[in-house]
Length: 225
Image (cartoon, rainbow, N blue to C red):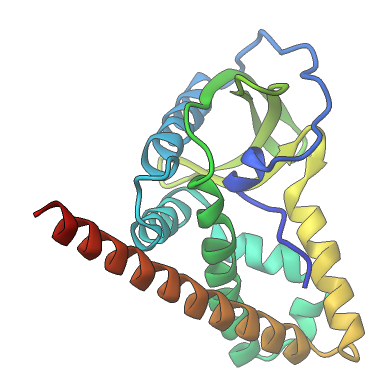
């Protein structure tokens, strides 16, 4: 299965990113801009850097997803037309495994970065809702332009998509999942099985890495005594 391309970690991918385009100065929905500024700063502060244990990073990242993203709506969108043909148990399995997949696949990427800055650059309205514009400041590479698509929810906002340099992460993920389903004979179960295998493999790998870190820490502590 291809590497996933959705949510906040996508903004830190070490890809060849196009130069930052002219930033918008307007701010049609200041409350939405404030919401994204707080969330982005929180993500960078709590998830980046090598000193955050991977297990803690996954817990924090999952909390960020559940708090700020409409995972139910995103899950339905990325499954696309196959949502209608899926059974209720398949939908439930997919939503659970999809979130596990995102958490495991992306949270590890944050450990490779530190010192990035996050800056909101305004907001606007379109036919699909509210879009907040922002950028990631990177010292050694071009800045990354991000647009966050929001919907009002419970007196605040929830994120339903991220557009990185003009490319929708949700649309990209839907296309990738559709390819997997088609390669499995058109059955949603094929995607579910692939996600289960992927998340199980990642869980075992991350657990092994955590054990190695603990052993190294004990060895270091013993050697310094």
